[in-house]
Image (cartoon, rainbow, N blue to C red; front, side):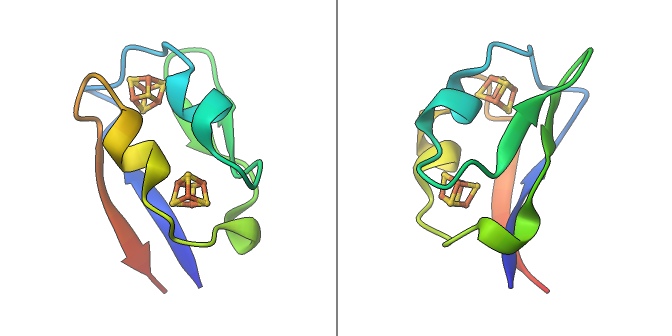
Length: 62
Ligand code: SF4
Ligand code: SF4
């Protein structure tokens, strides 16, 4: 399984990754994006490419 790794210190909670993900993996928490449904991630990399803050550092494999 895959999931994005989010650096909460860099995240500006803009929601772009939440809107970009085609699989509904991400949700916006109080201060940063969070992985809500890691099982759904298809490792497309769209969230990583879209993040304006560089807060998604990698698509990790479990
Ligand atoms: S890699 Fe793709 S499917 Fe996985 S969380 Fe990012 S946008 Fe969603
Ligand atoms: S796109 Fe980047 S900065 Fe914006 S909510 Fe997602 S991880 Fe945070």
